[in-house]
Image 1 (cartoon, rainbow, N blue to C red):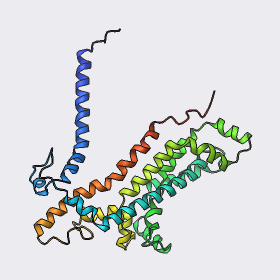
Image 2: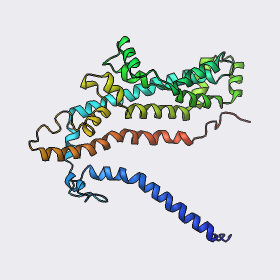
Image 3: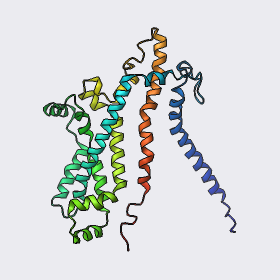
Image 4: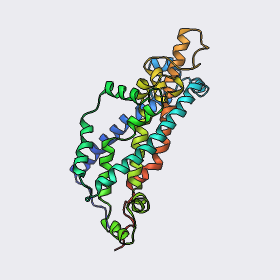
Length: 296
C-alpha cells in the first residue's frame, strides 16, 4: 500500500478556502429555494416577521388546498404543458432542418445563410411590427401566437450546426456508397447519433416556453388560453389571484394571508415539471456522442 502524500501548508490552505467558497455559493443558491418551500406551508404572518428562516412555523397546507382546487390554475397548467410540448416538437424539427444543411460543406451559400441567422441575434423586428404581423397572419388570440415566435432561435441553430459538423464524415461516405439518400441518412444515422443535442434543444425550448409569459400577455385575450406563468404573474405582481382562490374570504387581513400562501405555493407548483423533466435529459449532456459509431 502506498502511503498518502502529505499536503503542504499552502495546498491545505487552498483546499480550505476553496471548499469554504464552494459551500458558501451552494448555500446562496439553495437557500432561497428552500425558503420558498418552507414558506409555502408556513403561516405567512410568521414569515413576514422573520420567524421562518430554517424550519417551517405554524404549518398549514391551506394554500396548496386552494391551488389544487382552483380550475384556472389547472387550465394554466394544461395550456403551459401544451405550449411547451408543441414548442419543443416544432422548435426541434426546425432547428435540425436548418442546422444540418448549414453543417454541410457542399451547401451553396451556407455562409450567407449563417450571416442571415446571426443578424437575428443582434436585431429583432420590435414589438409593434411583430404585433402587426400577428394581426396580419390572423394569429391574435390563438395558441400559435405564443408558440411560433419562440419556437426556435439562431442561438440553438448555431449550437446544433456545430454539433453536426463534428459527426464523422466516414459514416456519410459509407452510407452514400450504399445508396443512402440524404433524408434516409438523417433519419437512420444523424438523429440516432444526435440524442445529446436533441435533448439540449428540447430542454432549451421547454424552459423558454415554460418561463415565458410576455407573448401570452400581448397576444392572448381569452383567460382559457392563459399559460400558468401569466396566471402566476397576476398573483405575484398584480396581487390578483385568479378564479375562486380567495372569493370566499371576507376580511382583508385574512385574504392577504391566503394570497401570501398561494404566492409561494404556485411558485413550487409551477417549477415541478421542469424539475421532473431535467433528470431525464441531463444524462445526455455527459453521454459520449460517438460511442460505437466508428469502429477502427
